[in-house]
Image (tube, rainbow, N blue to C red; front, side, top):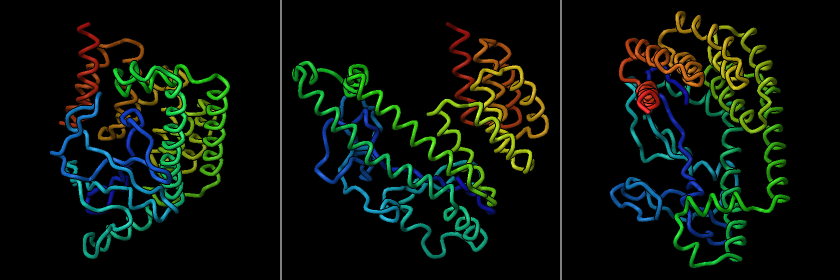
Length: 316
């Protein structure tokens, strides 16, 4: 999500429907997306919350450029309030929507290598959705239809993943890791100079290591990037997340404390520090840190969500 000189941020929202809220295969050559119809026109699909959008099937993208029409644009103002627009990535920004400085920053980000890789990965998700639904359909065809009809979509999704043939599950897992490693190799080969694109680069790298689980590799890569560019805190944040995911809590805590003192308005550092205490079940200390973070960053939703999570754990 690039931060523009005006203070606005632009968020890309893929429209693809979550697979555990889909009840049937789309037509050949199509996939399911959340419908852009009025939000008041709620779906009645089992297992959905009331404000879920209805879904519709659309043609699979023929190219990366074609895929852009399935990416919605959300504009977040300088105060953090999101505005859901009618734009998609293919039509954004319309003439005059961004000032000249914002437009330069946007163009630098959207044409960067990390963003292009992000779009490729999200486009692949469309085809993966169809592949999953095809496998689910085959599996359910062998089961008791009446029993399945009484199950929620989420339960059907879980049942399938639990009962998928081991060989198929293994092959799919290995392929997923292979694709993630290929993305990691592409990312590490990139020279990224745009600050917003560097943040996207870190996010993508962490996403891939969440698949491979080779967090020690991520630690090394991000440490090297941060050493070369210590002004880019995203590299340091990513590095600390790799430490945390290896359960190196002491090192993570020490460096996160130093970071929040230097960058008190950086929410990422606060969240890492809070997670260290939360996962060590030191809930009182975690709550104190949330309180300190909110005093500096009042109203931050991520901090408020964590505050609720910690208070719930304390009151159990």
